[in-house]
Image (cartoon, rainbow, N blue to C red):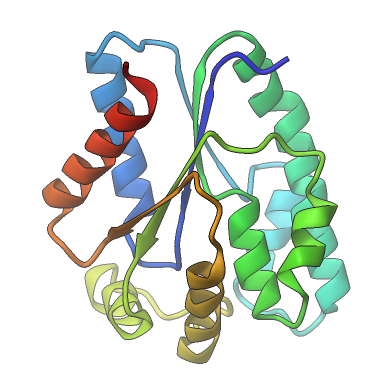
Length: 200
């Protein structure tokens, strides 16, 4: 059924995923790829809104309930956005996908392999842009760059565990890029990786 391209942007918080995904969308449209769909997880569904409530406090949600929210949110995302866009031959850029769930919920006590298995309904991405950065720098960017407090998912110990799990993923379609470099350099490497994979 899949005809388009599915590209997922992954990494711990503070690595610049949202900035880089927008820049890649602009680049692809400039290349004549006008059918580019920008999307994100958590979505704005009832499940996604519940997940965002957990950013403030995770105390009243068990790890299993939390994981189930992410999976239900993704199931809707796949059905309503990703699969229709791919079937129409569009390029889908998603800000987070099931690798984030495997890393963050893995840091919360689950086996990543179990999480990947429970996400088997979701189309495999053609390309994963995994932005890497020392967790300490990530936390500093969140606090100083954004002027925000670390939320319940962004505490340093959690980011360290999550970063280690991201580092353990070895699928051949994962492209790791050092996000501590200037944003323009990061974007150049992303564009080159895309050209190398999709252009003859």
